[in-house]
Image (cartoon, rainbow, N blue to C red; front, side):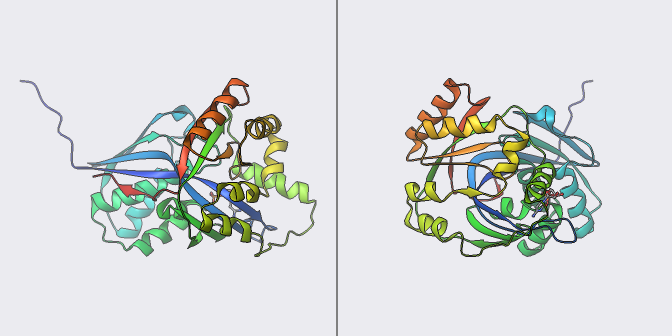
Length: 307
Ligand code: C5P
């Protein structure tokens, strides 16, 4: 007699990657974290996370760069699952399957998207009954970018990046992202930022994002291109000097603005239209300025169940 394996109910959730339109970094506090003022935009590169009822917690990862993702207890999706089970008093498992669409260790918060998607998926599978605020609270304990992956759209992040205020945005913005074969470690980039500061205090200027916010409200990509900024960019280029060539290539290809995304090494090039983004991506690839270039648009929604 043959036996047919039966699987329990499943929930699938998509969560987006992000680009920082601006990222202002202050001097670290006693906990080692740097105060930030940043404008996040969620873009249409997605992590797909499917959870299936099971006795134990298991994890599998496929997709671009999957071999670089840790499968042990440091994995952010597993940490999210454990944190949710503990908070909700749940004693159940799940098979967690991640399909990666956001560059790994690229400064686009792919791991944070996995954590946010896992929270939403397991909340539904286990029927924990936690409120959105309670999930956001759990998210903030997992990592600085996890609340934004839950929230999505465009938002100003302060504190560690976890306190979010939605931003008003008109229309859609088109991006070409230049991916680098080797990722950068976020703590390394922050450390290099501190070394460059040489012990001098960095004051956070709350007025600095007036241009970014005005460009978003007006739906004006040319103005937004001029306003893109990232305090971590020089530190990222120090650690990955070839990024200087990638930034130049994106500018030469006609981008409206070019910036390293978050702690890098992904380079974000803003375009006028989807066609323009495709042309910039093609030019960067043809010039060997990056390992691969992908196009996406934003803003898009945060972690959502796929019906
Ligand atoms: O919060 P998350 O785990 O994503 O942060 C990764 C690392 O990035 C931290 O351990 C810290 O070194 C650095 N970081 C920081 N200040 C922030 C966010 C992250 O120094 N606001």
